[in-house]
Image (cartoon, rainbow, N blue to C red):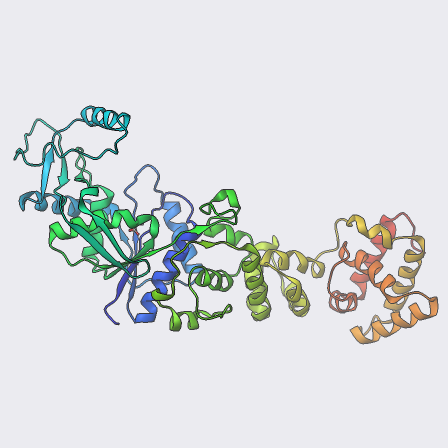
Amino acid sequence: MAGVRVRFAPSPTGALHIGSVRTALFNWLYARHCGGQFLLRIEDTDKERSTKENTEAIFKILRWLRIDWDEEPVTQSERIDRHREVALELLKSGNAYYCYCTQEELAQKKEITIKAGGSYSYDRKCRDTGMQHRPDTKPVIRLKTQITGTTTVNDMIQGDVTIDHSRLDDLVLLRSDGSPTYMLSVVVDDHDMGITHVIRGDDHLTNTFRQIQIYKACNWRIPQFGHIPLIYGPDGAKLSKRHGAASANDYYSLGYLPSALLNYLVRLGWSHGDDEIISREQAIEWFDLTNVGKSPSRFDMAKLQNLNSHYIRQMANDSLLDYMEPFLGLQLDEDKRGKILRGMNSLKERAKTIVDLANSSKIYTESPVAYASECAKYATSKHLELLRAVCEILGSHSSQITEESLQQDIRDMAAAAGIKLVEIAQALRGALCGRLVSPSVFEIIAIIGWQEATKRIENYIRHFNVTPR
Ligand code: GLU
């Protein structure tokens, strides 16, 4: 289906919500699947809340996820003249009219209707009065919405949705200060950008019927619509900050890989049989709006974390290191890089996030600055005695240290002392890492070298108040 043109139209009024990222992803996948085009439009007409920084952050997140767009992004605020032009054309063709009702008048009518238990919509007082524009006044321009009949949207996700025109109002196209409304801008931009399919959150479904009225009045081809159900938190409420990370940027900061987030978001509301691990290539090949579910999806952090662990394990070590660098808080020289890379296979087995990985990699680049409380259990005088013996073994290995030979020597030492290897290993772990969970201590020693290991063990002994011999 070449010729497909879809768009992602975020408003840069705050951090990009994870649900919006999924909308972008579904649009992008649809375009790539169909061999069509994926466009961006920055809907920045809310001047007070839209910022350049938010716009930049949107681009950054999309680039991070490798959701690429095909044409120069459209900036909605630069198209105001065009929006205005369309409103005036609608006036000329008799599909719109000047409305002189004042805010006060409308507010009063609204209050009366609501007090009487009704639901308010504009009473079309100015619709057929044929009033011409008077230079001394500041009217709004309203659309002459169809009053009778119905509109059915054959939604690509929701199926047929019908609305009775009696439920629509004569919406404002141009405000009294001459600024176009969101409803008008979206339609004019989608039309001018040649958008064939509008795929967006189902919170826009009611807007769709109002926007279709504008398409009809302009005599423009109506695009196809697909409304994606929203994302809920575990408690069934719309996903928000209250549930923890809700913005896409949070997931970067928490140490998620773009491949994992992408996989997670693809599966959130869309399925391909029982497949859970889906690469970006497979997603492009398989993606279809017919397999997007109609009910809201629940965000499941544990599932995302499992996917993240999976993608961490799959990733080449040097690429992982690139992802880790911003989280390390230090500049890596060749030596440090080399050490982390040597230890990476073991580190990545355990890591759930890049932040975990960066933290745990510190065992290769810095001595512990503190010891976790559980280390004390492995710092009795007996343990410290054993650690001193380990230092001697390390000294004897100084020229060529291998994991295997060291392990053998320490094993022999444990056997000779009549204690379990694990006792020494835990004490060593405490000394080398400052905590009791880490890759094999023999591997750590082989990577950091005997001198550094000896230094850390001596620090440990000193810390627990016994002077090394
Ligand atoms: N700017 C709107 C939003 O961020 C999207 C409008 C649309 O997709 O039509 O919710």
